[in-house]
Length: 449
Image (cartoon, rainbow, N blue to C red; front, side):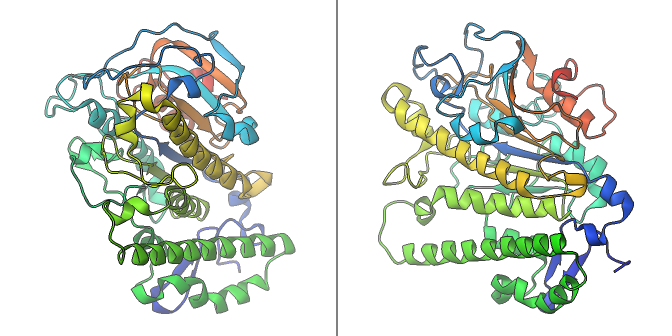
């Protein structure tokens, strides 16, 4: 047992591996005192319906389609500066059950650089937001993104420096890579996302035989039983919970594979993937991300919930009875405003699910995975119809190992505060020695503990 640590692996036949979660019985004193910090991003495309998302905007005018140029939409500042209680709007309502773990941030802006599509720039530059025209070699204000800067600092301690997840499995690609990727090694160099849950699973757990990926827990069961006998009672419960979580992921993948196989036999107008349950797909990819963060496979992960601007429909199960296009609806907000608000609420439910899941994963000294993670929800547009780059929807969950202020409030920042100020503050909280990032003017000190 002395040779084990919290990044130990259980190995079985066919090259299968399972990384262990933190277990008190086998943790060294140093590991027990200092669980690692993590960074995770949950990106929502096409902005939000402001009337349903932002407190105080329920009676504001419904915006009409504004065209393809990004910019700022003049809106009054409805909130006091600094912290105040969160008002639970229809879109924010799913977060009420984790209200003490999240912070709503309003007032953050980005600057649009003329010359590229508004949707493509809002997604691809969300985690970079270089100052306009600072990048001379490209039409995009796009540089190395925040996740990779953080991975440069913490990635050497993990098998994967960073992991990029995407919930767009469609093959009918009608847009450039800039519409469908938020993670970039640098200007013009995309970090490819994992889009197929089965392939992501095999990559994380190292299964070489594709016919055996569903039974990875069986492949290492003998080692697991041997180890379990040497654990304390609490760790045995945690160990069983972890194996149950992995088994649940396998069962979800089997269900989705069966569903996809069945759809392939039916004559339908839309691509097969349009009919796959959207929430199940997002939660499955999110579960994979959480397990990777929990076990130390990585400390940095991004998750793009959907592509920008693609008109390909999705099946928002429990919301609509047939696939719908988020982007197409956003350009006719007066007609589809109620349906769009339902999509925003749907995506927020999935974010709340992941916040709760991270909060349920125990780590050292009574902390949780969420306590040691900086987990940010956001979109590159303030509204999908007006295409505004100001007053963005941003929510931060977790405390980054105690470096961020505790949640439970609504922080309103001065008009014109760059989004990159938040990224700079998060980078500093995670240990990076930087005084500037992208178009930042100063770290957003209000979020720091």
